[in-house]
Image (cartoon, rainbow, N blue to C red):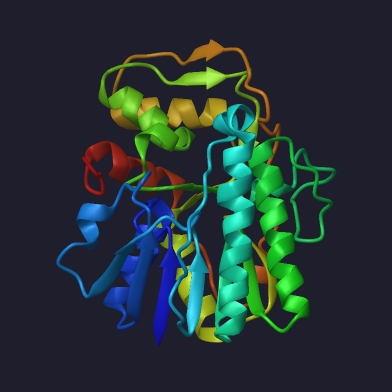
Length: 298
């Protein structure tokens, strides 16, 4: 089976590319390499890498499946550059969906839990109202709507609403809170918490995300799926865990909350579980591997 992965040299896309290549898929990566973190890891593999900026006059090749992972993903930056986020996350998605429709390809669109905004109830299921708090979340929701529009025209698709994904090879400039905490403690510095630390997140290891996407490739279910663990962890608890595992004497540093940050987030993953998938990587072991450098990208 031939699979095209947009943003396939980035954090999540790169892990998907490596895993699928190892499983015998014919993988084609399309990436501008602008924010790539895994370019070197794709070299020497049976992976075709097309260096191209999808914002320009470039088309993705036809394939059996298109995994659309290319996106700008920084909440804070999206307030400063909303137009860039619209172009990258909405306009490009419309191009991908149109081409995939013409090629009769199955599309897996990587969306985000940021589409929900502050929850009305917990855990958050796929029917929860959407009310994004940032341009980033808004553009991911708009990307979903683009894919669904082409679905009405015959496109076969599945939408993955990813919660807080962590693991090796995140681009440090656009990394999530776990990677930033690990970076700090590896330098002997305390984690920095924005706000009071009581805010909660659902942290899922990239390996579990990749395995769910492989299952979706195999079963090709239609619709929207939350991809998380179903377990909430406060940022204060996370900071203490990272400090403990690093073996340093430190206390978190608190600073002002950031605009667009969601207060609480935890996924209802019953729909994903119904496919036979289950998240396996425990938070403690996943963080420990990052700190010890066993799965660390220099």
